[in-house]
Every structure is written in structure tokens, then in C-alpha cells.
Image (cartoon, rainbow, N blue to C red; front, side, top):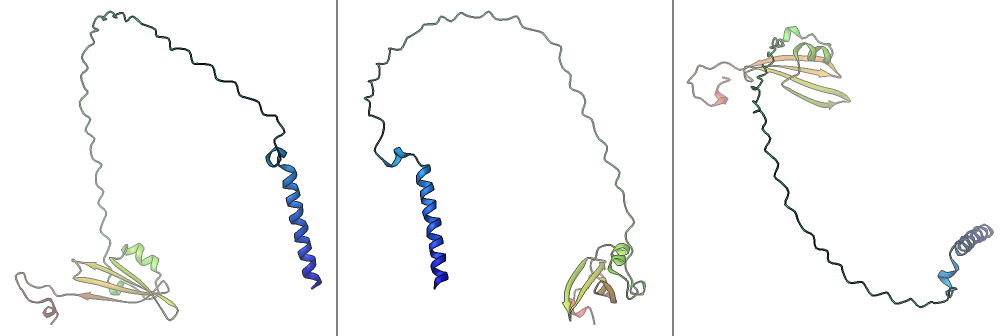
Length: 174
């Protein structure tokens, strides 16, 4: 109980000190009767009539025309397009070229970015799947990486059908 009373009295002293400082810093005229006597304001003097000034506009002489030589525009400059540098296409990864345990960076450096990639987590391991495709997706190599290293790879090919054969896609694999 004694501890609560001491805390309460300290808070009251701080509050009283704050009010006293605030009261001494403010102007006495704000809270008391005005100390300055009231004076009557003199009436404003009437406004003088506006002065109208008439101006005479003199016509300016027209200057003589100045003849300048005709400006011939320069022919447009045609910039030649920079030659397009064609890079050799990156090799397509074959299953026998992808050893198990190789780091992910060496795969992407050699074969480029995959056409499709997916990342998931299984049993505390990060599993990535890279799919490299060619021939509009008819041939694909799938590389599976666990924790950034190759764990398996396989190639999937779809048989090429003769042109003009119309059959449902599901029949093409038989």
C-alpha cells in the first residue's frame, strides 16, 4: 500500500509542476482582464476619386521587310541497322550427357534456361524440375534436381505422325 501511495504522490507532483510551468509561460492578458485601455478607432478617411488618364496611341512605322536566304533542309540521315548477331543454338540435353550429382549452375550454363521449371519441397529437400523442349514440345528432356544437384533425368518423345492423319491425340501414343 505504501508503494502505491508514493507513486501516486510523485505523479501528482509532476502534474502540478507541469501546470505551474504552463501557467507561468502563458501571457497574463489571455486569462485576465485586458490591461490596455480601450481606444476608439478613428474613422477611415474617404477614398479619393479615381484619376482617369487619357493616353494617345501613336501608330508605329512599319519596318521594311528583311529578306533572308531560303533554308534548305538537310537530307535525312539514314542510320544503318546494326548487324544482328546470331548465336549458335545451345545444345539440347540428352540423358546420357547429364551425369548424376552435377550442380544446377553447370546445367543452366551449358544448356541455357529451361522451357519450364518447377520448385517444390519434399521431406525437407528442395526439389526442382527442369524441362528442356524442342520441336514444339514433341521432344523433351526432364531433369530432376534435389538440393541443387541432378538426381535423375529422362527424355520423352512423341512419335511423328504423317501429315493429314486426323485422329484424337490420345490415340497417337498407341
